Image: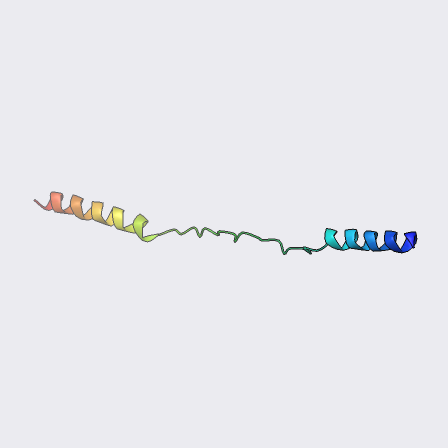
Length: 59
């Protein structure tokens, strides 16, 4: 009888230890920052400067 009571107590204790189960890990999304480059800015500024110089030279 003592063995039966001990087995019942151990099975109850073991089942409560794993009652919650394993939770799935929560991963935060990875933020990817795209680097953009504009080659138009490198062309427009010298052209505007050239137009200003040409306008001043023509006067």
